[in-house]
Length: 351
Image (cartoon, rainbow, N blue to C red; front, top):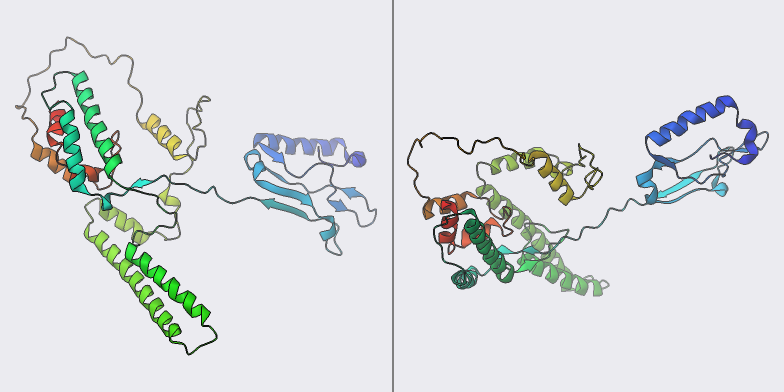
């Protein structure tokens, strides 16, 4: 399989049995031979016979990551009989390209409310819903109007991979100013007494101080906005290792059913992970729910009171900001700012 054909005298029954155990283990763990066959790895000191006692194996999924795996005969150190094996593996991670996100902080909410009011007038006015089809029709119309207005009026920003939450436009302008002074100071390197060097030193110190103030201000604002549930995030941030980011992501998941028609086995994709979690925790309804259609229910224990706009607004206020509940794609912040559709939501809630 890998030994030189000139060493057929080594193919004894004992050696073949030992090799058979190795081949079975390679097949069991789905490993392949990376180092090409027929290459000598050792030169006997006395007989100068070339053999191959060394080899390189890896998982089949990692074979494509090997850039090279070859023997460098000219790099063999003195007084040694083994030839060095040089392996180069591509470990560069795939670069993420996040899609543009909605920037609610720079949204003109007055313009959004005006546009939303005009669009709401074009759909059916709220009325009492009497069946399930009317509910779904009204819900889809309301969702479509809000999503279209958010998509049209809310500006988009493409997040940077190196984005810091405490960074601001003022710091960006100050950074450009410091770089401009730095180029001028670089041009006057020979003239050490030129005032541009002192100006550059003062600008760097001021920029560093403003960065510290921005970090402290952002941290204090976040602490003041903590809720009962957010205090657990604060505990996790303060007790975890800042360099340990493995707990911030879902690890590789395995499909317990091993369905061959899906791509959920050992997946790393977030969409597939979400689908696998959904299929695991939310089982499909049974074909027969065994509910007697003629069952006589007990009378209600209390009188039903219709839901009011105040109750709906109170629930919306308790939602977390920037959270996008399914199936509506717009974040909760848009609902907190938009109050024109409360009558439509009330109509849906009463159903």
